[in-house]
Image 1 (cartoon, rainbow, N blue to C red):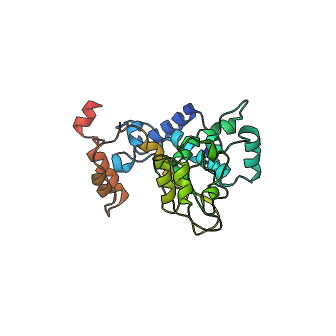
Image 2 (image 1 turned 90 degrees about the vertical axis):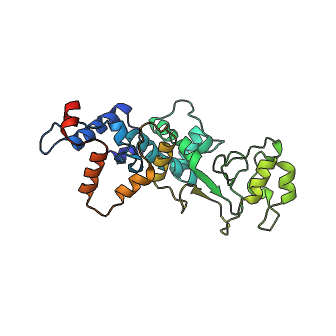
Image 3 (image 1 turned 60 degrees about the vertical axis):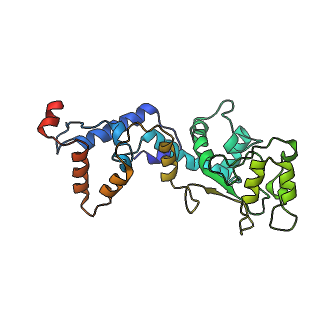
Length: 270
């Protein structure tokens, strides 16, 4: 129900906790009764199924992943009306990926800006003719850890990637690249494939098709968290959840393995 609002606004943390409490109560209640024994904490249940949890989404982090779609629109559609309004007010000489909070920010801008970090980790430029890709401060190198240029020189300020290509040809100017950039950047630039499409574009590095599915940014957030509540090996849990049995049977197996059945021993503990 709150997904529509979560696309645009950052819900208060306390509200997210209240919604999660309602979800938790509904999950553990027995039959038509409102009460039920909470056999496991919600922090352990919102871990992915492949790591021993039930895969419930952590609403605050899912909220940030949804807000990332709005940030992505500002990046990939810079000529839209809303993108031009935000750019004029908050990052006139920059891009969304390097924008700051600014003075007197609106609540919507504060919300969307929270997704900036996750977009910086996942978005990249696909180089076509290079006319719209800035050499500095844009992720276009084929490096998962750091797709940005690290060379510090005034020669590349305010220039686009097209300046590094042989004029009227679809290949890199190797002599120029090796002369201007450090060895790390030069090797990555020369290893960057040039798209057959002449237009530059954006894509999501973690997705095979380059799209922005909400699942991938949320997974990226989860992967950045410490492995606190994860239990068991991934291969075992994947085999459990991929069994060709009814969902109720899988749920019963999970409860039995995680000690969430109302046996005498467990009831005595509770």
